[in-house]
Amino acid sequence: MHTTAEFSRALLHPKYWGMWLGVGVMRLLILLPLATQFRLGAALGRTMMRLMPKRVHVARRNLTHCLPELSEPEREALIRKNFEETGMALFDSANAWWWSDARVQRHMSVAGWEHIEQAQVEGTGVLLMAAHCLMLEPGARVFGQQRPGIGVYRPHNNKMMEYLQVKGRLRSNKGLIPKREVRQMVKALRAGEVLWYTQDQDGGRRGSVFAPFFGVEAATAAGAATLAKLGKAKVYPFFVERKADHSGYHIEVGAPLTDFPTGDELADTTRCNRVTEELVRRRPEQYMWLHRRFKTRPNADDPKFY
Image: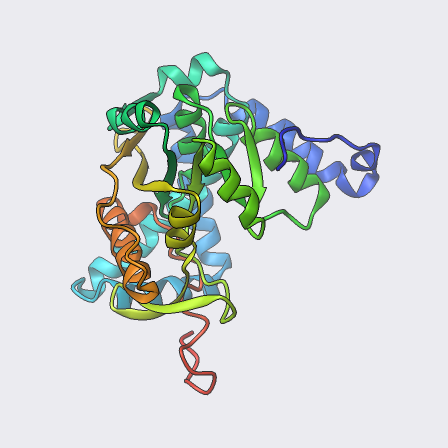
């Protein structure tokens, strides 16, 4: 588990100078009010939409199948809004990594904290079931203001980005565990820690269960049930959003799942997908629709989804 971000002199190599310049610019931009940040982020998102037609196609395919009740004009409007929110996510991450504790507290609200307090009384581990919404970074920072926890993450191949994300995510939390280090996760849960976990991205065929996600068979990690069982922990839905008036960030912890896990891998994974669906539907424009969620098909010879 990573509990510190190790700076290396190698990060001063000229190949990283452009990234350091970008860090400097963002450190200045996060001084702006959130409403101003959103206007800049939305403009960036619209530019991305013009420059990334393949991602527009991915979002359109996802929304066509996941939210078929939308009319074509409604779907296209949601795609545009989703790109605007994606552009703003750059500011959200920078705010989460570099805002002071005092400024985070001025722009946050929390609901459902009584569930975490009850878990503390019982001495049980807490597995937060989150969706890959665009506000996960500030969500973890806000939660950590109340009770520092541990994140499950994918180490970045770029050393500079790895340093930045680890340092940023440890601003108000205890540590980060690489997503393949299951034993460390179990150990943390048995010690009564809080652990963030997401299972709504395509991780490939190996180790996945094909369970319906918005009615589409999706390769899904079955880790929530496994961690809950081995870690003797309870699973809590975790919702995070940027407020509609751009005044700050809001998180909500739901009641723990009852009768979970059941031992039926498919049933448990399907239930977790339904929990994720409910979270996504609360603010669909803030979900990561640009991800190729259905890239891995149930059968290797099935037609490509995208």
